Length: 139
Image 1 (cartoon, rainbow, N blue to C red):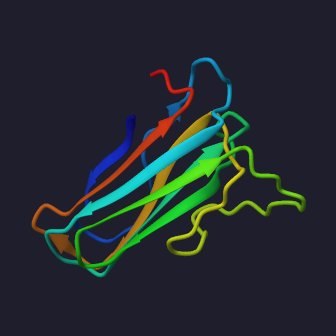
Image 2 (image 1 turned 135 degrees about the horizontal axis):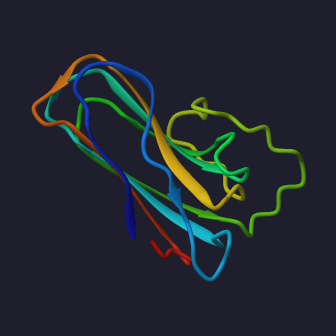
């Protein structure tokens, strides 16, 4: 497992992005990704949205694969994504717009990052964490 982001949240922020993780290993693209989003809530604030994104074109464009929506309580959520999902219609990629607490399975690339937005002023050591485990992770 690897941490995609650990971010202390304080002031409102729009469309912030974390570091890019390049998955390397046996597979150029993982077969699956288990993604965990956690919020350690301190105080204050209104909402935090964290979109986990993947890129298949070297990081030129990004596509949401899941959204973790947090408010004013500590919480932990998981998504299990797989590339084995057969998508029979075109997927319309979103960038920071996937609906709250949803995922789009089948869209798995070799690069990953987290984009987040927060509203309200959080305090008291409010920390957002997103971790990922895959079948091909070597970092």
